[in-house]
Length: 238
Ligand SMILES: C[S@@+](CC[C@H](N)C(=O)[O-])C[C@H]1O[C@@H](n2cnc3c(N)ncnc32)[C@H](O)[C@@H]1O
Figure 1 (cartoon, rainbow, N blue to C red):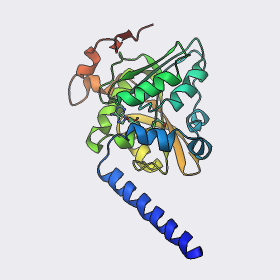
Figure 2: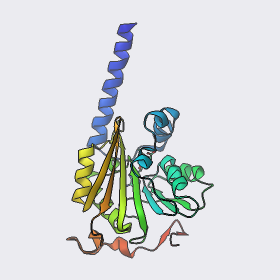
Figure 3: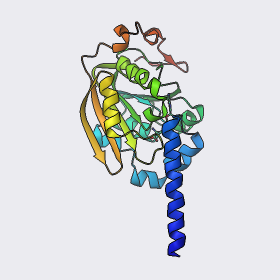
Figure 4: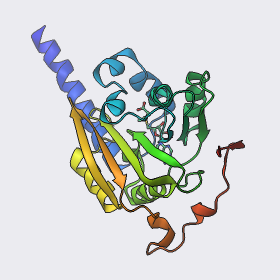
């Protein structure tokens, strides 16, 4: 009996380490069916609640928030509730299957729109958002592209806007608190605080002097700033 339990634990441990190794070696979006099974379930909600984000920073009612990598929309729904009927949540995910699920979840919230888009090229206008939130997504972006995602966050944030990033320990693409702080600082944000829970953490950062680094950075003008103000045909302006 004890031996059996030991064998099961070892197999689970080895499986977890193999998934983590592969996830770190080759970052890529989690399949939608895996999100539904492993993320959108009561155990995840109990052990790794999406409220990790709102504990680190709660958007004030009426604010305009963007979300990257919405998945099945659990964090999106929380944000929609927090900003209330006078606020707006614009969420994106690159997988249409995830977007369909998130849209069903937030169907009752008129101020909440979910679209298929890539976080490396956000379909939103410059300097419109009070905050950009993302949970367990940045680690799924190939290492070389993470700077582009953060540059896009700076571009769409209003001056002084917040960047709020969360990570869950069991995620194969998990980023440590140190790695996350390094990435955002390197992208021109100032870390305001880091909230740590059991095997999960969130970081709140502010766009320092935000003029939009991608507009006049070493790589020249960002073509994204010229992108039209639409997502899936829905106007994102107010
Ligand atoms: C692990 S899931 C987390 C979902 C959700 N944030 C949550 O906590 O339940 C990460 C999501 O990020 C999305 N994603 C990964 N890379 C992306 C990118 N470059 N642009 C937009 N979404 C992306 C994936 O499709 C996936 O739905």
